[in-house]
Image (cartoon, rainbow, N blue to C red; front, side):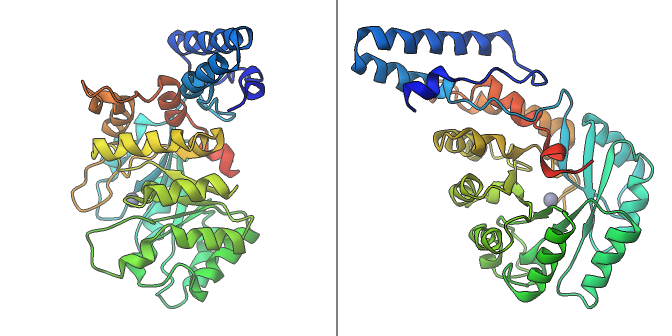
Amino acid sequence: MGLDALLNLKPFHQGSIMNTRDNKLSRRTFVGSMAGIGAGMSIAREAAAEAKYDAGSPVFEHTTPGIIDIHTHFSSDMDSKAHLEATKTSDKTVVFGGTDNDAVKAQVDLAPDRLIFFTRIYPDKKGFMDELERTHQDLGAKGIKLGPVYCQVHPLEYRHRQIYAYAEKHNLPILTHMAETPSRSGPLEYARPIHMDSAAMDYPDLKIILAHMGHPWIGETISIVRRQPNVYADISALYYRPFQFYSAIRLAIEYSDRPTVQKLFFGSDYMGGSTGRFIPQVAVDGVRNMNHIVGEAGFPKIPEEIINNILHNDSLSILGIS
Ligand SMILES: [Zn+2]
């Protein structure tokens, strides 16, 4: 980062939640870089290097006072009341299901002010494009959930491409499971985030969210999110592998551009998997406490402002969902 960048810090966004410690850090950074000018370039470089974590920290352009959970599951065999209760942790919650899109839509209709319906589409099923049109045009789906590894359909195969083309045309974001799974339903190759880099090249206006930051291919995910303007990632279900979670966010910071970290969305993966874990409140606490793994090791902490910004990122407005 050059001095120009250091001296042209954008003001903190009004809507973001910053504590005073973070603001102090930024002022110290600014003073440090000014001292560098007076004392010679080597000191300036040192100041810039030290400042990198602070001055380079993202000041998100789109934050909200509340929390948006971009990744939760519901299906007809789940407890509707428990789902309604647990999702109160967040101000807005995106909900998708399995093959029973109507059940998800009915659940969302119980709290339409805070629940948002994404349709789940299985390109291995007959009539999947009809189901996409029906759930979008008749049921008002705001986005699409995909899971190529579960459907045994390659993410760049023509059936997925039909979905991408429709989604791009109708401005429907897709949230796709690009991450490992213990399920042997399909080749793990189909879960590699790198394929969505090619998809982003072919469908440049398609908004893509890579679920779970593409673990274990987190570096791959970060490099795609960094270079593709319309590709994002959610951090759902990462907090309970605390070292991986910490290092994932650390890595995103080290790639350092503001856009990379500010394109990470909060998600809980509530009711995901077979164990019914990922309770939204536990997920929020997991994000807030992501530095607990640092302990006595002396690793750099994740700055509080980044934690706050991830938790309060306004993913819905970024994705154009009203
Ligand atoms: Zn999930």
